[in-house]
Image 1: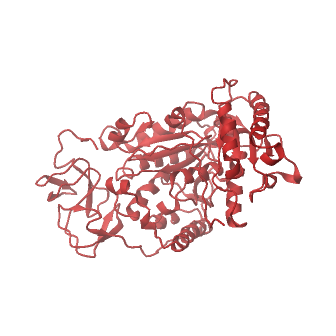
Image 2 (image 1 turned 135 degrees about the horizontal axis):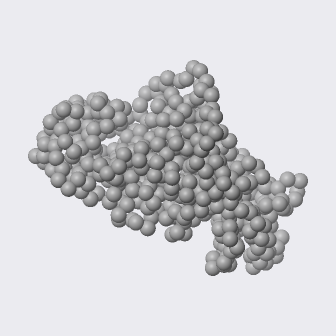
Image 3 (image 1 turned 180 degrees about the horizontal axis):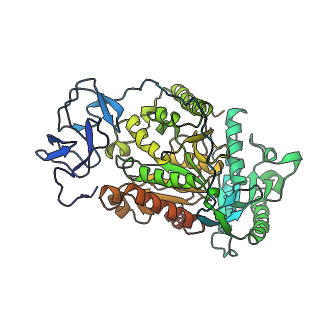
Length: 510
């Protein structure tokens, strides 16, 4: 990271997040001999400490807890002296003991205020509202992936009528050679969420004809079309070329229909904001994630929903999130997803601490516990109103949790399938991801990433660490931008054409 403060002083060189923390986070590069002050303690730096990395403020004995945000993020692998660099070389991961204080009462859902900010959206028959108006061409299996890509390419340079955003392809890597059961249920739930997404005016579902994930499963009573969704197969159409042509004709019919749909003023309560982080660094939990958390709380106050995903990146903070549940049932459902994911990882000989990437660690994050405590800040401080599985419809306002992997494209697909009509994505290392039909707002946690990747970023939350803005100010900036984006303003990921789509595969390939 670029030097945030031109002339660092003893009082501004580090960030001390909680009075109980025995480490602080370097705002700028720390050099041996530099004196720093935190909580009235003066410490002389003993090692070079990169920005975002931790420095010990007091002696930490071998096996003692290392604390950040007042929470354990690991244990000292050996004795650590004040002023020493604290990271993977001297901190070991330890799965924290489960100690939960579950709610005993029931917090009622908030009633949206009579007056609230609005955006211009596309009202749908089911009561949801779109922020975009796409035609989707979706593959039922990998055998149809080439075909849907070919169909979308036919429309790449097309001039669409006003109000039609384009044709988005959803090629699939899978859909066959999978056991019928949990895997097919998850796949069908995900693709159904795309076909009937509020940002989709109409869709064409294409299969080969003999895959496990049959096109007919998506239509009632043996029909192959509804008012908004059409199904066809390569075998039924007479091959790839014939299927491409048949799909092209259907897309044009859907475009004509979509052209008649107009944006109307809609309360912010109709927004379902997907919360995602990727390529996190140590500043993510100090700047971008808390700012997005403030935005989430603002939206929830106005009756909207903010959906936190990435189960592996809740581990270490799950006790805090469960304690915010609106009742015991919601808390237990959320914790059930965490426990279920733990069992899922054990089948493959993994644990949650396998999650942090080399980039995360280079950015100062040492363990999954530390990463999760920062990631959970995206959800603000509002009560947890519901917990849903991957791709399940989000039907409750407020702060909702969705069970997804930490992998960015897979998590985004689950959020979209659940009905997120706008997403906010924080990043410290500059993760470049988007989604075909849902606008994704990219928020940089540090000013270096924002300046280094200007075409990819929408908001610079690094200004918080720079001392140029508060968490609340940047949170309001994200909220105001979200309303404009929901009304049609393009995000950086949309301008670049990012259209990553990957579905979670949880079982074996047969």
